[in-house]
Amino acid sequence: KKMQTSGDVTNPMSAKIAEHCESLSYITTGIFVISLFLSILRPDPTLAVCLFGFYGAHVRSKGAVRSFWVFLLLTVCVDGMWLAEYSALRPFTWTQMQRMTRREQVAVALSVLNVFYKLVVVSVSIRLQMLFGRREEAIAHAVDTAAASTSSGAAADKRSLASRDGAAASSQQFLVSAI
Image (cartoon, rainbow, N blue to C red; front, top):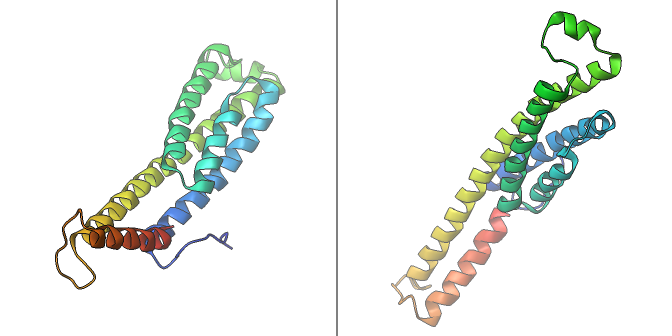
């Protein structure tokens, strides 16, 4: 069963945002759990970065989601460097894999699994950031449309009180439906 989200789920954009936020939360939870166990075996900065993802999905913040996926890509680089330079997998041969201790095998396996999940959540995060951008454009368009006409349908001067009231009311209605 899908988690209950606030907002108007009949609005397709709000529904997509809610779905992507939910996916982001679930995948980030998986990354967080894997990183928790991985931090026992080797240093891993991913736990702190996951907080950006949880926050961004919870408050639906474009900036937090962007920071999350950018920093998460940096942790993918750190994982790659660890696998290439510091893991017991050097040199990358079948014989070397057989010589690794169980602890080293677990560290390598969790690192590879975590990189895969990180790349998946980066994709989800980028799509979510684009949805936030489209929502912002739609809100700006609604405000501009409301500012261009009065309640009677006649064109209003953008500096007039009627256009400001109409723009404010329209943007509030749109924000409520978009969230």
